[in-house]
Image 1 (cartoon, rainbow, N blue to C red):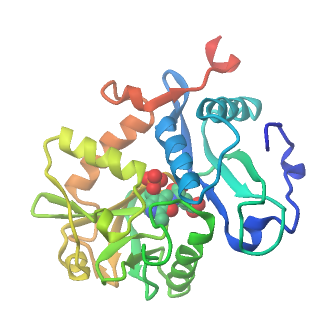
Image 2: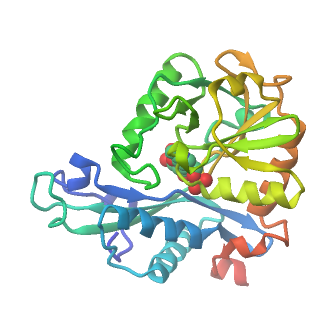
Amino acid sequence: MNGELVAWEDAKVHVLTHALHYGTGVFEGIRAYETPRGTAIFRHTDHVERLFRSAGMYLMDIPYTREELRAATHETIVRNSLRSCYIRPLVYRGAGPMGLYPLDSPVEVAIAVWEWGAYLGDEGKQRGVRGKVSSFRRISSDSVIPAAKATGQYVNSVLAKIEVSKAGYEEAILLDDRGMVCEGSGENLFVVKDGLIATPGFSADILGGINRASVITIARDLGYEVVERDVARGELYLADEIFMTGTAAELTPLREVDDRPVGTGEPGEITRTLSGAFHDALYGRSDRYAEWLDVVESPAHTT
Ligand code: PPE
């Protein structure tokens, strides 16, 4: 926290932290995996870059360099003796003057790491999860900045998640303000129909997922055609396969949407192929994508 290693139980903030009241924070979700080269952070540079961009969109000056945040993340992982983990950098407006004008409140930085298993359950990752279109629409660029990963914006995902969870589903699918498919509460979404892969583009107010970009690259490298375009809700019911991508969720298939089975009701061939190649990249089993890994130099790994 702010340049110091702080024990878990002491990692506290003041109750008048600006971000706690007004959602004036930006964050990242990153994962590190145990790979043959040691613990490695997947696309670390891209996540740090997105953090700086999110901060910039909210006019927050991060008081550290990209390299300092990278080194602090490595140190936090090593000091916690974690071989794999989830990483949560958080940049937030701390305690300062109350009221909505944020620019006189300090910009604080914390990086937390912890072990986090399959986000939507091990079974969900294998067999697919049941999704439901939420009645809450995805926040639009009329009101906020969907491309920024800002804490306050996540009440939108929280509302959608509560709604579909209470209805008995595992994940929410949010439509954008035009009624086109946007993304999950914390994942981007892909549909496969007749061998073609489509995913909503930036005009649908998506968060530009780093795993979305990785899966697009992998799919194209494998010879699949991937189109970024508007996806209508009805296409979810016609799709042969649907899957979602995100740091927490990694690649998770959908086996049902709105009580309708997706394709055969089991993860399809393209989903399984992409999932295999994507997990090979995450776990450092793929030479082709080796440059996506930021290896954490740790005494435990270098001996
Ligand atoms: N859309 C949203 C709204 C989102 O929160 C995420 C990540 C994505 C898409 C996928 O982005 P990327 O991780 O770069 O591929 N969601 C993070 C937060 C999850 C949470 O519950 O917290 C994540 O997956 O870490």
